[in-house]
Length: 138
Image (cartoon, rainbow, N blue to C red; front, side, top):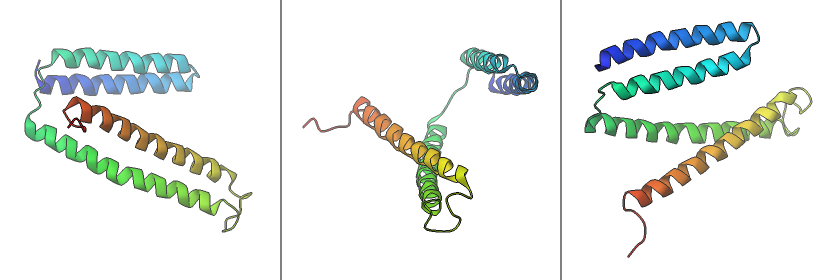
């Protein structure tokens, strides 16, 4: 199986799973939606293992640079957003705290997501650095 056939299977599977999940949600069958998504992920994983998808060094470098840029943009943006939301809902700036009570919760969620993202990056950097020969073993 080549990459073109894999992409076609992936598109068809994605549409089918999307249709299945939308029907399950409309009928309040969330278990079916979760099982459908997990089954679709498993199916696509098995199909990908059969496909001969070759990643060259150029594409790997592009993916690394894209991941670095995404992290460099997303982490400060969501962190600053959470700070501003929490600052404006503290009651010192308009809008007052009672008017938009959900904004404080949203700010807290953003703050926790920022901390989770930074922690995940630090842990993965630590392990990958040790795996590929980095560290202070002099």
